[in-house]
Image 1 (cartoon, rainbow, N blue to C red):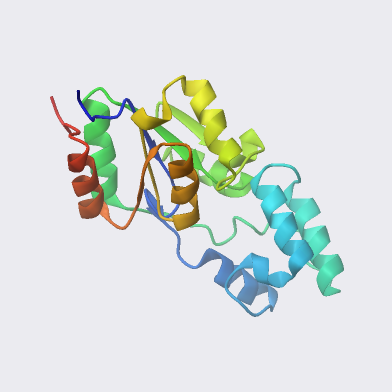
Image 2: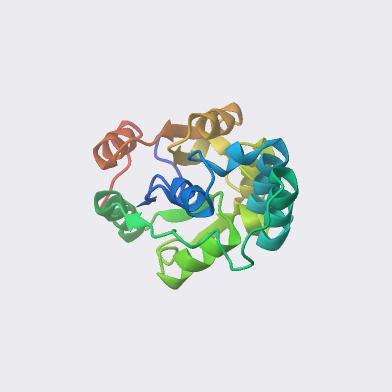
Length: 203
């Protein structure tokens, strides 16, 4: 029996694209220390997660930050201000080869509205047969409900799904459901992981 998966799920940020210290640059621009928006405070951390799930908009997020930090911020959109993703070309080539081989390729991503719009504008989602985005699903990784949603929608057994993500907890969650989950490091490692599953990258 072939070990080859029937569905291939890729994360976007940290796998297909790289981001250049977006949070650190934004915090510096606003006069805050740190390199992660979750460091603004516990309520702000909860608010950014809610925004990732599409439960609140960007304006509501910054209102939480203002209240928690006792500051007044500019009303301009900020979360996409420094977002300028760089495509990992070798990894994208592997995804394209899978696509050319007739494989079903989808994206499973945690993303906020502003960055989702930028990625859409640059057509970086176009290669995928479908995109499962946290801001539209109202679910986010590593909550197992994120993966269960994909399983229901795709109708494919977990053990026949390849999933890769650069975040360990996201991999562990996928594995808990029986998915063939591998942590992403680079294109060469991805290629080797696919070969262990007897995946043919071309017909």
